[in-house]
Image 1: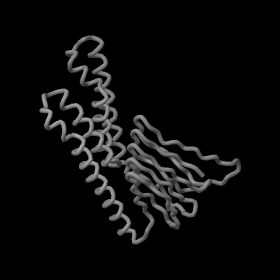
Image 2: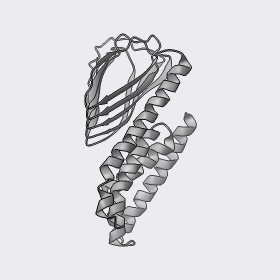
Image 3: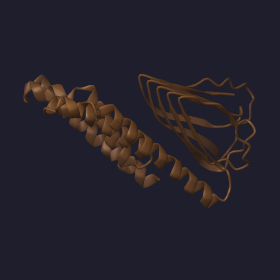
Image 4: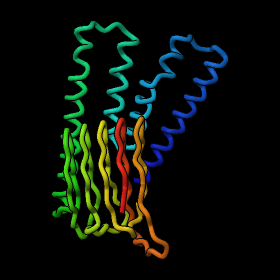
Length: 230
């Protein structure tokens, strides 16, 4: 885990240096304007975020989705792509996202089988959603996928496992709501583009927090979002 974080910090440092060089180059007209047009584009932002996520190995599925979407929008601007091929763009994106969702589910199922219990969640909401109540006494996290839909997950009857537990979220044109106990330590570390993931908990003064246990909400939100309540 620590080595992955160090790699991620190194990649982020390199990216920041390259961005700084690009800004200096644009200011001093070192590079052709056409190249600068591609460098300072929203497609390049998705590509850079995708590379960072893949390099950290903690949000690889989100990273691949961002990288593929960024490349598929950027390539037609760089080289000529026949219209007949461009028409295949959105079907291809849906197929790729579908395969990555299956991969996410397979990884969670493998973790659940290894633990021999239902301590992991794997919630998928596509063009719909629903309510779910988790009652695990050793909850270790899982994955939440919302695509043109959403769900409400009630964790108030669950007990966190010791240490850091992670819920990896991916929301696009959708979102999810998490209801957690008041004494849980919750950290939100979600990358949002034209969306957000809000912590709307109201913790009363004097509440004794769960020591040695933490739930981290990680992942990616685009054109959608989610919220945490208690």
